[in-house]
Length: 381
View 1: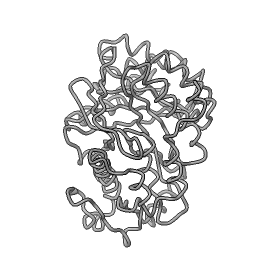
View 2: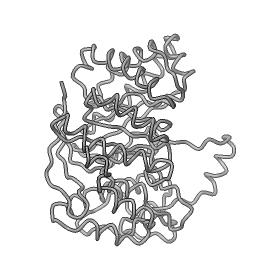
View 3: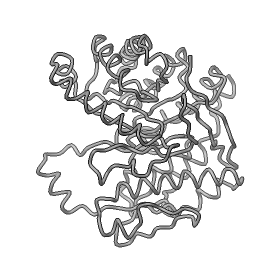
């Protein structure tokens, strides 16, 4: 039985974005929103921005070898799972809705490992748990892993009461046919939350555009009809990824593709440690301007925030202490989600609004403006 209720508060004009009230057990939040990632590294800990109605993201990554190690080595298990538990508990202390996400750097994870993970994760105490993200390419293989995970998770005392988000992993998302097959297996499960991993890219990338559109069509034309209520799409590991400057805020613009929660990016640089250290020494952070939907270098940055919002992390603060740039950008994204809700409630024209963003590229704008037109086959059906 679902432990989540999703209610439409208002619908946008021009682009049918929806303001949603989401209740998960005793917790609740308003969407669209930006989740806040917990981090033990203080300058990157986005939970400093949290309120009681925030979505707090606890993201952990392990290799397939690490998974095998914690399954068979009690000391390794206590050490690793202890971190997960500590992060969830500290996130719960913010009063927000805690969403636990695990990514496994491997594929074809066996049934025994799926059951082990389900039993372990069920004891963490998160409000929402995603099916673990893997590197699977084969939707049938991933579906079997998910089936084993869910069967075990729902058999536990805590898991029976917890909402499970169903994941679309990045390697499946790259292939629109594989994505379609995975969604077909999810139809029987009727998930209220879909977690979509873009693996350091974004929905406007040619690699992912087709699958993203198919996912949206399936969600609105099939899933929500079967559910009898609205559903939630949560995008994670989304980056602007463009050679243009100013850098178009394609991550933030993802909200206009009917994504209800915008998550953090956790994709590390896959380079030798010494190379990464050199990059850090010379890297010049780019700061988000929500007035233009562009990321600008710190010496050119302007902070155009609607006057009714007062930020915790100011431009002056991040210019003095550059390591705060991630939290600065997260807060600007969070402020923009609240501003979008204001626009929806005031019945402002969202098409006109997105067209006015001078640093958002034309390709992204075109995709947004055409995105909500259903494909012919869905109309015929």
